[in-house]
Length: 225
Length: 292
Image (cartoon, rainbow over all chains, first blue to last red; front, side, top):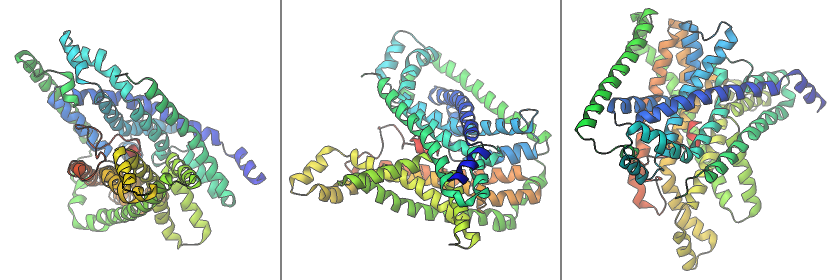
């Protein structure tokens, strides 16, 4: 037990979780923006934009996240010399955020689209009857209701994003949880069980409140019909 | 109702013209974007023939891509079977009328759904290395299968449970009315229908298993991604090799997704449950877990 506690002093476990939380927040914001644009494209009347949205979703939903993040590190950074900052570590961190955002945007798009499916036809008809065209109808009538209907699936995407932020190890982000856990176990394999349960518990503590919160919010904010 | 009908009327002449203009602008933007990417990559010399010609040779496929794909499919196929077994056991456990079994199954399922698959894989990989149960070169493979099984099995357990919950109440009531006990009706009436209803979601879960098998790359399991990297570092074209690997994954997963959608239409009359959520809503691709 004492061995294990001294290990916690040596390795910055909270700091590792903080890196994952930062990855999640930044990637979450970008994925939400990109995913909303994609969802708008997919529900718009313009065929070429519908096609682009559908192609994006089908490509990135079906690619393993590990390949996307490994591609960011080995392909973009390694082979093309692509950087997003002067500092090497900051640059790799940002490339990992980019990869996470690109992957999860496809799921955000589908979540919002399923939210749009919860909006009754009469809402759109009423919007058109008072003379709103596509963008105003989407902005004022459809999307506010769609976002409320999409809270539960969006919460699920957020949970997946938190867990998937550990895959940033494939993009050589060095101080996030999965890498730190691996180093700790390699250093002290005699206390492998406490180490694993510390990290597992950390994720349970992060994930379960979000699940409860989004379930509560989706019920609370549901449009009464 | 489908999103397409919600937002706009059948277009009149003026909106048809606007849509046409929008379409042209959209197409120009797409072509421009793709063109820009191609130009930027070409300027970096990424379209040089020697970067791509290796993929035209049979040896590249035989020794790297197909070889890697074989290991990917092996891990995924075994995990599919073990996940279904795990899912059935714990799914039925969550429906048990014995409170203790219900509680234990619930805790197991919730725990493994909350922990990132990669952490489980790293844990099992290093644990098996210290335990001396397997040959050292087998422990990455076993860790991949264990990690995939525990996570996806828990998701499947939830599918089983929600499948039974979402059956119309009349199914169970009819079972009880003809004199079955609660567990008889569960076994012979509710669970079989729930299993049919969950088949499309199950096939979608195979996509997750196949995608997550690529996590094995991080714990030194030699699957498609690891082989592509090896190929790319030999030929100096990791960029191209990873794109080819991604395309292989996309093709297989796209076929699985299409199959799941077709299946949900075919099966809807075989069960009292719902094979899909809404008439126009496709199989639950947005279901949380599928992003995993």
